[in-house]
Image 1 (cartoon, helix red, strand yellow):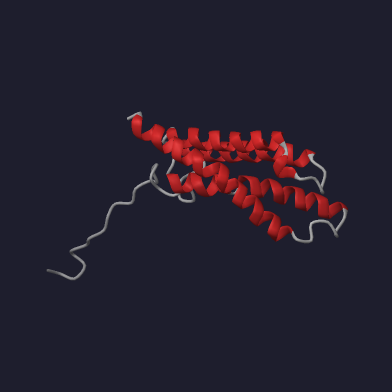
Image 2 (cartoon, rainbow, N blue to C red):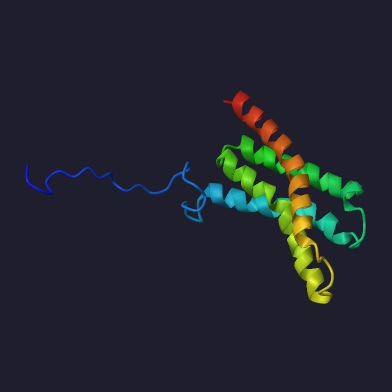
Length: 149
């Protein structure tokens, strides 16, 4: 055999559904579903949160609890629709409420820089509460995905 006559290269393939979100083109439907679900999660949890005063007990607010239920529902629908992988959905929906909290932190600190001086802890607490909403949505969506083949 001559040198270079034997190559073991695969033909390059375009990214497909099983490719991670950062490899897929933006026009891929799975990526668009993820972006829409993330925006819905931020708005469902963010709008009730943004309306509350800074010093309110916001986790006892019924509208925010409805927003968390909506976040779980959006997660379940996205998992059941089989558009993307479970880990992508889990990661993205988990950061939806912390993103809403961060938006409020940025806006409030622009008005008064002494507000939200413990913002990292606010993000950790928001991630825990988001986890409480997203995990049941993942479980329900995975069950629906399994039984609707």
